[in-house]
Image (cartoon, rainbow, N blue to C red; front, side):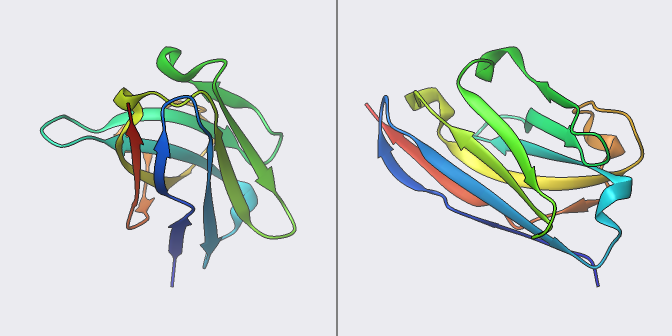
Length: 124
């Protein structure tokens, strides 16, 4: 059974940091691109960042470049999203997702499996 489990969300003040984790199981991790997406109330889901596990290639949306860092722990089958200099507009439910393939892009249709989400709230 494929599982993606997010953890590490919470409440933080503007300017603070949080690290999200996505623990994956049930599939061959190296064959996938793992992405982070987020959705705020009343808005559409948007891509944040993704990483190709096989060679570490990463991609970031402009809104988070320079503030967020995606990384992979191969031994633990876990992807991390380090979020620094958080802003109130970063408040959302954050989801990790897995896409079988090589395209390092945040097109939702590419992603086959999704986690349950983790709430991130940034207060002003």
